[in-house]
Image (cartoon, rainbow, N blue to C red; front, side, top):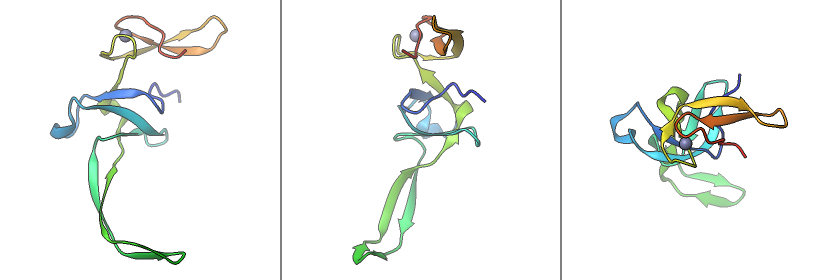
Length: 111
Ligand SMILES: [Zn+2]
């Protein structure tokens, strides 16, 4: 399975929760098995942390904000060249590697 979204890419949220729609962020994790991605600052959830003792240190209780994974079909890659949210095509580079290509400006996204 060749996912077209990679860690470190900038993506735009195109559907899903209303308050996240149109947001852009960096992909911080890809979960290929689940077809999900974790995007910085998107799909924020709050988790309540209990007080825990860990190796003599106390981690204080409180709310922890974290990014929940969202479906890969809800995001689109933002082209680093034309900065539009775009569909991605695949092409072969000169040395035979598979590279991603922006369908807007036809720039090769992977250097
Ligand atoms: Zn482009």
